Length: 473
Image 1 (cartoon, rainbow, N blue to C red):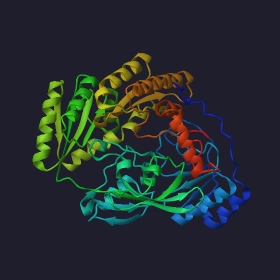
Image 2: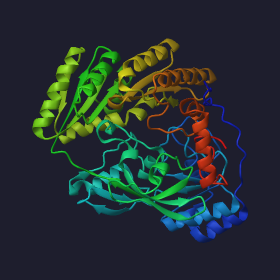
Image 3: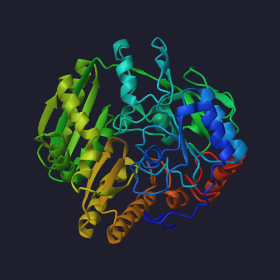
Image 4: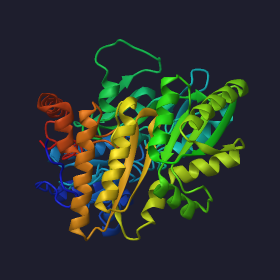
C-alpha cells in the first residue's frame, strides 16, 4: 500500500509568485475587495486540517460570476494558481495555497437566485450556507437535507461531494445537485445540467465538477433538489453496552428496510465531549441518535420497529424528542461534536478519518479501529453516519509532538487499509485534498488515477485550479 502523506511533511511544491502586473490589475478592478494584508491572507490560508502552509499572496472577494471569470482569466494569462474559498471548514487541506496564488473568497456570493417550489428546486450562489438556505425556504414548506457538521457553504459542499447525517435517506451532494454554472480554467462561463430530474444528454459534466475539489473550475451557481418538510418528525437516543452492539443494531435496521432518516453513532468519548460543550446530561455510554420522518403513523411504526431491534442488542434508556426545540438541541450538539472534541485536549489539532464500508462490514471495522486507538494510548473519539457505513475517528494530537502525529498517521493508515480490504473507501465525504492522495491510488488504482490526471490536464492545462489537491501533476 502507498503510505499516506505524513501530517507534518508535505510534498515539495514549487511556489508560483503572483506577478506585480496581475496584482495591480486586481487592485484596479476590485479596489478594497482585493487584499494583500497578512491577517486576511492568513485567514484564507488555514482550515480545519492539521497542515501548516504559507498563505496565498492575495485574497479577492468576488460578488458575481463575472468577477470570478475576470480573476481566472488573469490567472490563466499569468499561470497563477487560484483557490476557491467558502467558509474555511475543510478537514483535508482543500483551500491551502500550497503553490501560492490567489484565494477567491466566494462568501459574498450568497444570494438565493431562484426558488421553484412547484418543482422542488432552488438555484443558489456558492457562498450560501446550508443553514441560510434552510431558513429561507422553510416558509415554503421545504428543506435541503445535506448537512455536514459545519455550517458549510453550498459551493464547498458541492466541491467535496459532502453528505452528513441525512445521507442514509436523502443521499449526498452527488444525488442532489442538478445543474451548475462554472467558470473554467480559461475564464469561460459554462452551464451544465438542467432543472429536469434526469437527462441523457452527453457526458454528465455536472457530476464531473461535483466532487472535483476546485481542481477543474469554480462553481458560481448551483441548482439543487429540495424536499417537502416531513409531516411528522421524531428523534430518539438509545444507549448501548458497547459500540459493537450499537452498530449491529444499525445494520439490522438498514437490512430490514426501515426508512430511517438519520442514524448517528457517538462513542463514550464523544458523548462526554458534547455533554461538556453543550451542557447536556446524556448518559456517557455508546449512543445512537436517530430520527424518523413521515406521517405520524409511519413515524410511530418506524420507531417501534427500531426500538424492538435495539432491545435485542442491549439498547436501553430510549429517550424521545418530539418537539422541535428538543430535536434541535440534540442535533445541534451532534453537529458541534468536532469542536466539542477539540476541547477535550486544549491546543490540539485532529487527524480525522473518513472511511466508509459496506454496511455488513461496519461492526468489524469500527470495533477494530477503536481497539487499536485504545491500545495506542492516543486520545480520540468516534462519531459516525453509521446508517450508510461512514464513520470518523478523530485522533487528538499535540501539533508540536511528532510521536503523537506519527501514531495518528499509523492508525489512520491501518484503518484505511482495512476499509479498502472490505471494499470500502478512504473517504466517504471529506474528499482527498492533501491528506489522502496515497490512499486514492490504493483505492482507485494507478490506471484510474492516470485517467483523472488526463482529465485535469485537458481542462486545466496550466494547472492553475487549486493545484496540488487530489493528486500532484
